Amino acid sequence: MTKYDELTEFLLRLGDSALIQAQRLCELTGRAPALEEEMGMMNVGLDLVGQARNWYEYAAERINDGTDADTLAFRRDERAFRNLLLVEQPNGDFAVTMTKQFFYDAWQFHLLTMLKGANDERIAAIAAKSLKEVTYHLRRSSQWVERLGDGTEESHQRMEKAVDVVWRFTFELVEKNGAELALSESGNIPALTELPEKWLATVNEVFAKATLTVPDAPSTFYLSARTGMHTEHLGMLLAEMQFLQRAYPDASW
Image (cartoon, rainbow, N blue to C red; front, top):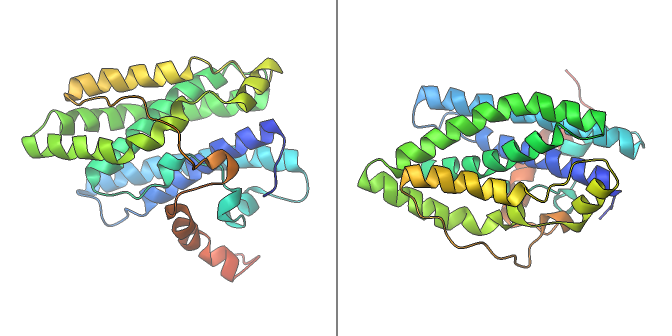
């Protein structure tokens, strides 16, 4: 597995997470519970594709070996992806879909809010642009979590079950990583030490309105997206997402 410098790895983690979450949303085309919701999820997915492209283009410039955004998205194998384990999990039912989206949105919102103050002007610009979209994403997913959690007895039970399904993968959202600490010490990005607390505060606030229980802090386990150790779901997702590019390399319209 190719290992890049810390800043490039950081950019890939942001780009990969946005792209994989977008791909999961796109899988719901024609399967959403209502036409309006399908359009809403597709719009969020398209926003995330645009964000992924921006992070990839910056990463490709740093790699500087002819790699471009399409190469990073469609010609890397599973072990080369750095995305959060959370976003590669299957959509499940609508409760699981919205719970995953909410956890990811809350993490992105606070991360991008911090990154828009980065000394690296390129990171600051991408973060500021993306934050406008993610603010809407978080408002939308928070409203769904509240509506379903504080809805009927069945919707509440299904939300509690959804939280149980995906909560263990949120450990990556609250871990304090040495590489990101080094990036902040070098002045590239702001210190992200408060990110876990801010993410958890948002979860607590929304879950209180939704009458949902916040589980105990998740523990790390043997999988780690930072080292390319993914769940079994990512390989199948990539097989579908990358099929056309791999079957017809260099094809163009």
